[in-house]
Amino acid sequence: MESNKTLKEYQELCKNTAKKFDIPDKEILTWGLGIAGEAGDIASCIKKTIIHDNDQKIGIRENIGDTLWYAAMICNFFGWDMQEVLNENIEKLKKRYPNGFTIKDARRNGTMIKWNKE
Image 1 (cartoon, one colour):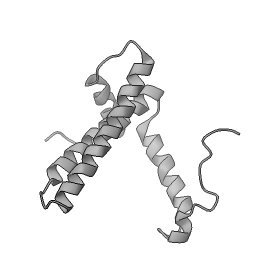
Image 2 (image 1 turned 180 degrees about the vertical axis):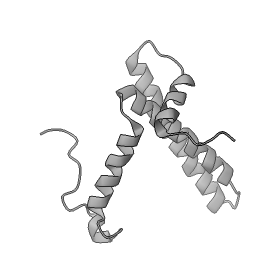
Image 3 (image 1 turned 60 degrees about the vertical axis):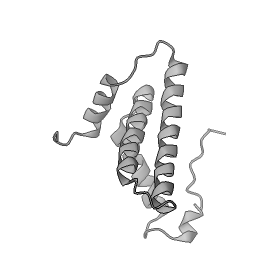
Image 4 (image 1 turned 180 degrees about the horizontal axis):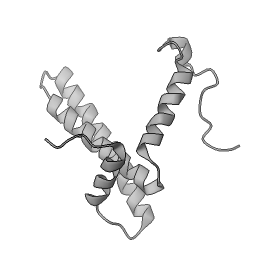
């Protein structure tokens, strides 16, 4: 197995394994719909594992990898560094759950991100 890569190296590798698009809208639609499809595959594998007693853990693992590939491609599309995105998420979660998860904190109490500037 190949040695561990940084997220930056992973993002670059993803670019080299992705289809090239001439139309930006078609590209981001591909990555956005792809990540949704892979997330659905994860859910399906979990259902089969738990409800149907059909062990799909290998499928779950593979689809998590595919989901991360699409996440990397979305970051590439927008010119985002995946490590920065993850760091921002960690900081948000630390603010939301300063002492670990609680139901009270899960209600977000003013920590919800405003998606637009209005």
